[in-house]
Length: 437
Image 1 (cartoon, rainbow, N blue to C red):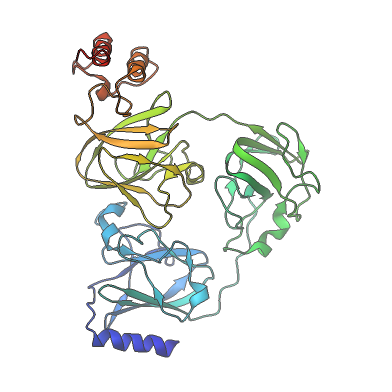
Image 2 (cartoon, rainbow, N blue to C red):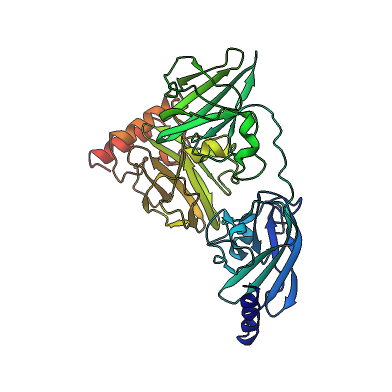
């Protein structure tokens, strides 16, 4: 296989591939963090080929770029220059020594390669004009897996949209008297889960946490809401608890060794999460929309390319991704146009919407019909405050709720432009409904 890769290098020279001036590795190279202004530069060795040798820790994610950002956090600046794997979480161990096709610039920007075993590696990258090939070679024996360090309690399994993976879990909050609590979403129709005192330090390493796991007792794994259910001893991983779709509070009393699950209420809200102006992809700092019945509204100024998603939860990526409204496709971002009504859905595909251009928009999200729209200010129908292409009693109710202080004031609701939302604006809507305006 290495001879085949050498032949590819020779072919690259023959067809005159264009070498880039620089290529950097983004992500978890050594102690390097994910940061668009920081990368590990690869060495150009000729024939449109770049190389890097170094140590990678276990569970390292990374991709490539031909440009670094000038300012920290400016991922948008380098997105057209980034490329990664053909799909996200591409585990390279299965293809050591073999040429691997990378994804396209921009399209594969979010698709990371993944090294699961800590060791020294050599990376060889051929930069064809329209194609990029990469090969990984392990130069040392893998480091011994680090043993997990017990600390707190984690929920394993299908909560908050997670899959069964020993290195991923929802950490429970510790409260008084050896009691732990967590609010979780069950996205699928039915999900299974159990608990552990520690998470694995490498992907797929279930053996390392066997002694820390605990679950249900045999025949008592179907959750009964409000009932204190017994927990198994440490070191027992089956059976897992079973819980239907919904939003819950899970409480563990480790003194009594019981689990209690109750249905929880969360705020009826909708958030926009993305790059500026939508909180710079910070799940704890999204743009909160204003609620008017089943329709939520917000206003934003768009400059350039903006990527975003919607979620009715916030605070952490676990919470957001469990209730993420995004493109149906898991392969690529979906480009939307101003004033276009877009149908959305709950999605765990990891992709985002993208809107391009400069302008001021009124954003509406209809949770009942699962549609949203970016309406150009001044381009929409006067009085159509919820973006449903009609001026009716629903729009009047929005005015009334703002006047009563039950909803936030929006510029779109100030129909006469006097910097107030009052009975004059309500009369405008009435006249439009009666055909008098």
